[in-house]
Image (tube, rainbow, N blue to C red; front, side, top):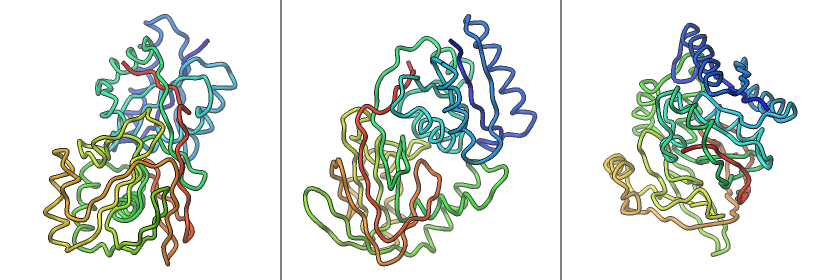
Length: 293
């Protein structure tokens, strides 16, 4: 049985030369460990999902995603509800999922660890038929994701920071009606995040107590009290005290419905999606196998 490595050639602002080097390194590492390597490179959005599905059909025992959270999302979507395990080489702008799982940032070590790890089972989230591994969000983070996506081509962490800084000053929050098993609440929120893991990325922890395998999603709502308060609260994302932000609430959900007067822009693992005025959120317990040490 083979190992497939799916590489996003531009993740994290990589150049074409770097992409070729990634492919050569991936093949060499797998060969050294006695497996048969199949290295493929994505060519367009959605391609990683199709490559992952094809690897399953060919009988791969492990599929490794080398890229950012968007590439990870596509590969995981192709492997969901299957017995084939997912490995990860984090190489994006945020790498929230990789950080949460403690994946080694060195590609050679990350591949080797995935080859020898005992796969574990984790949950997946879903927003209107779009699966997510790490987080999905409405509001400010979705707006930033959409602006970042407009850049196209080579991107990177510096561009993400610049967009976020501008958005902190200009973003206008929407009013949301959120229905869960606990009831219905309407609020004007700067953030409505549905977290499977604790991290946005780059060390920002939006849901500090979220667990990947508890059969639940953490629904985080941060109401807009005043923009200066929002800006001053940003450091709390990095010290695990997000719940101390004025207007922040976190609850555990299996399902939720989110509504707004305007069509909802949301993101799944950083990839923007334009939805309707109502979207449905749910968790899929134990839907994905991951091979990490």
